[in-house]
Length: 532
Image (cartoon, rainbow, N blue to C red; front, side, top):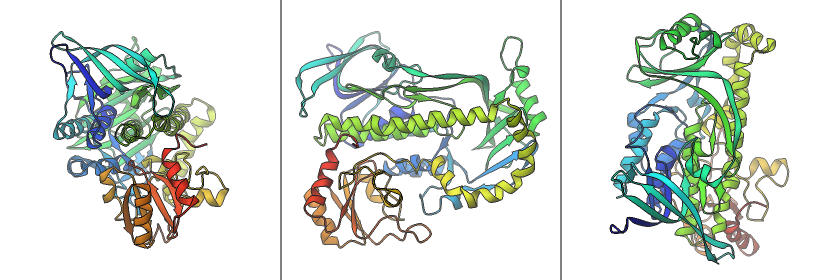
């Protein structure tokens, strides 16, 4: 920073220091990218807000060396306890569903305020800090009148910040990321449409103390004909209660007093509590940004999508978007890849956001539907069939459901070493190809991902082959025993070598011994902007 002029020059300007912005800043610090992060608030969030940290996000915290603190401070939820009215049907254990898939099969309850403090401390340990109290006043994209290395017109951003000391500061950056929430000034300045719907119902949230009537240390989900309640254990005797209210439960001015909400959960579900640390209500929106990239500017987290909290996916999706984008920015700024590498961010993450918004919208619609059939399901069918469903679901679709909830099933449309999309080539290929998915966990292969560098992995492949391919591609080599797979079904083949990106996703498969066209295709896959 030039203290005389109040100007700042950096590679990346991050606007917004919520979980997504902080994750981006921490990743960029680890990757050696010059960045600053600003926020109009005076410090991290104090309210609990989002709660659940899914398995894939836990893997990111592991990659950043932060997992021990999360494990020490979390409140684990090892099971889900569905039910109807005043009774639970039983419990479904997460650990069994995620066995062999991830080292973190539980849903971790680690509230948003804790996530933010964790990341603020990690940023400080890296010698960086958040510029609190700095509000974005103006953002412009500046065309530089020259071409970048790929022949595209180069650009940068110029931002004006209002600082708490009353001094206006100018920031010049190669890139800008809006991590500034649902009402994102960055997104609005860029004119990116944020289309969707607002649901007619009102949500309530209470961080309740000394709760009775629910299964402890489990995520409880209860239904009646008119209502549902979702409850998360928070540790320290607290439990998060979340549900909807009908018009009949609202006061004349359309508001909901906590006393009315307490009467509702007692009447419908037999749930009582002594008091609350936090209580709020809000309307549910389902919206998706039309673009995640606009020239040198990007949006992540709530600036890119908002939706129902059912499924505990929102904060996790933002964390993973930030991680994805940080790795892409490092490839360009540190690794020297062309700017087109950044196009992958939107190509990969916007479909994830679109699926999430559509799925939560549909699920919320089904939960709250007033149709005769929906009311019959909630009021009659569910109480009768629920106990049987609790026993059958883990057997029929448990691992698939776990994959979606944990966000370990996400697949990007990437090129493989033969230049084909990860979904090309028929059903058999789709089932076996590792390209486009996060590297399958084999029990001992995630420690090396902490370098956050491009790597080549061989599983049961001769070491000399792995070393030679890694040398040819200019990446780290790692040799592992053959993959035993999950339930005896290997996912990583002993006649393949895998090119793994900084973010842990498999970019290409190279058939051993990895010479000629196979090696050339893998090298080309590193620089391909998107799948084609």
